[in-house]
Amino acid sequence: MRRLPVSAIAATAALLGALSGCAGGDDPPAAAGPSASPKTAATSTAAPAATPAPQDLLSFSCRPGADGKSWSAQGVIVNSARKADYRVTVLVASPGSAQGKARRLVIPNVATGVDTPFDVDRLPVNSGPASACRVQLVRLS
Image (tube, rainbow, N blue to C red):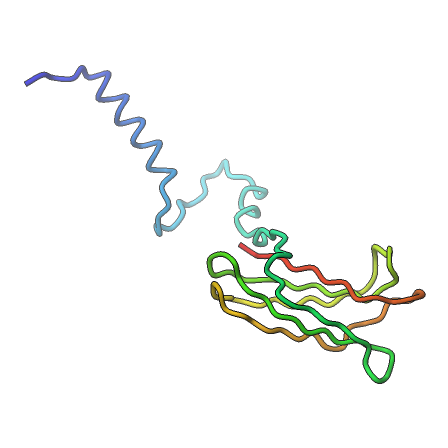
């Protein structure tokens, strides 16, 4: 039987130790040492990443209410990937307007391939001529 040199064993052990730190597991994170900065701790509680998902918006309609002061919107999402949360943002403003009050709706746990309807009521109307409704759909990870 051939024996490996001690340096080869040590290098292999170091490599396996480094790779085990990359493995996803359910182990709780190690306690932060005295050299950990507050910025590092805040990063772990960051909001989920948002990826634009216009392809998952199956249908959308938006119309003014009878009072003329607010609008309502309805739509259907069909999830094209794995189960995920979605955020719908609807804005009623003049074309070309980049700012204004909008309404956001988070739809949790949308299953893959299932049509999921949503309603957004009491949309504020931003001042300006020829108000129009715009929608943005993002997948939250």
